[in-house]
Image (cartoon, rainbow, N blue to C red):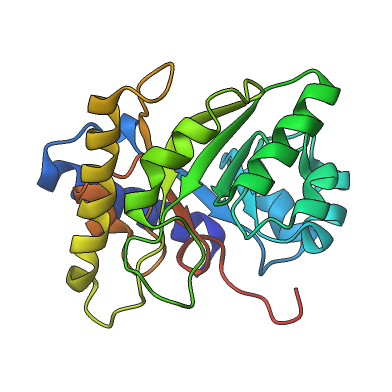
Length: 230
């Protein structure tokens, strides 16, 4: 299947999920996860009109960003080590994986020094799996209070990953849980502006995530494929 065929197939599935849940397709943005593909494929993805690119490790992203960082919008979606903040700040417009105070402080420090504000998603471990990073849902209000003074980071959304399920419908409680948490946080008014964005849903389960309110879906294999050695 060609890249254009995969893109068309994803667009059709996004549209169906939006129609099924009464949502406007314009409210759902697709991020192309390119960590498993080559520089050449990332270039083709951008040329095809997919403007949002995601990587999860700086050492893998670096050659791609150096060549193509002037194109598109770049998202960092992996676990971010504090000592790597200096590498990604100013290059990735969105960080989807803020999950601890030390990282928040380092992001703020480096953003302050660069004279910019970075858009972040709080990573929340809705499923409670030991193998996943993220704040426990009950810890999120306190975390938001702790970082309230860090004005160079702007919390625009929440992110989560559901367990892989053979039947995607089984992921629904995870996605619903993230949406409900966002709504509760907004009632508490812990951020200067309401939290709008929900980064959730991947190749196996993005339709369910859209039905539950995803505003960003992170799609790798189903959208851009997978290349051995990339």
